[in-house]
Amino acid sequence: MAERTLELLPRELQQVRLKSSLSPPWDAVDLLLASIRITATAGTAAGIDPGRPQVPAFGRRLYRLSAGFSGGAGRAVQSRPPIRLKLRELGARPRRSVVSSNYEAAYDDWLGTLMRTPVAAVTLDYDGTVVSTEGRYQLPADNVRRELNRLLDGSAVIGFASGRGDSLYQDLRRWVPKRRWPQVHLGLYNGAVLVRLDEELSERDGRENPFSDAEKRLASLPMFGELSVFDRHYQLQITPKDPSAVSISGLAGIVTAVLRRPPPLPLEVVMSAHSLDVLPAASTKVTLLERVVEVAGGEALAIGDQGQLGGNDFALLAAQELTLSVDRCSPDPTRCWRLVVPLSGPNALCRYLAALEPASNGLRFRWRAS
Image (cartoon, rainbow, N blue to C red):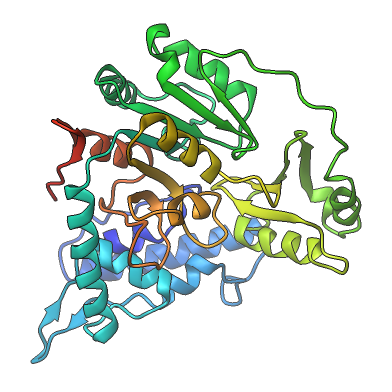
């Protein structure tokens, strides 16, 4: 139950783990009192009443979390973690039902397809997937680089899709062996700019700024002063100055509503774990996926961390069946499954990449659930 609760908490939230020196059952009482005290202290520091909180989306999912599935005669029946995560994204209670049974069958069908299908390429989201959200300005961990270089040495094509621009291009050139640069394709600014790692970055085009109207609308918001807004030519990046003051999902709702005021602007809002990106409707990470498939001449496995509706990997992980998430997944039972719990981010990615083994016709995903 504790691990299932942690699954629902956004990774950017600070976690405090309490321990008791007492023996059961008094340790439970001791920890309950300690949690009440620390909640009161945190509420006072934040200037809110814990008895009347503003409940974010993940809080509502926590409220619906049950201790187990009723299997009759008081017996608890646990569903497999990937199915639990899908049912939570669907908003369904995790109990044995027709819906749960359908997802169980769909999961087995999907995993069978994934393991049978040879792939020639991998397309990856970067921040939150290849690197952790908090470590996004650092190079990937050694184990991640080792797995990616193993695939490149086996002639695989790899695509990296990101909301970042020049910085990702420079970072990749720091650790990808130069002889492998022709195999690496980038979709910068969420797919607005496609470039191969051995190519030089071109100058930004001189097109008219597509975000001027959006910036004017955002400036009319009473909370505009609490936001950091960066015009990156191909997208707007919006970040709350105080992440504890407003959730990313809540901010996405506000910004989307502003952009859809008549006349609606032809822009899309997508979420990462730490910010919002406002993009032209034509910009999508799917363009990189299509490029990688074309270059590789075979199927590509796509992996990201924000596969939920509104997430900046939603379109990528909804584009085909062969997709995995290292964090949030969509409720679609035919794609975008998360296989490892409680691992997430780069640690989950390593498990996925290690499962890609050489075969006579490419790579095969050989999954062995732990």
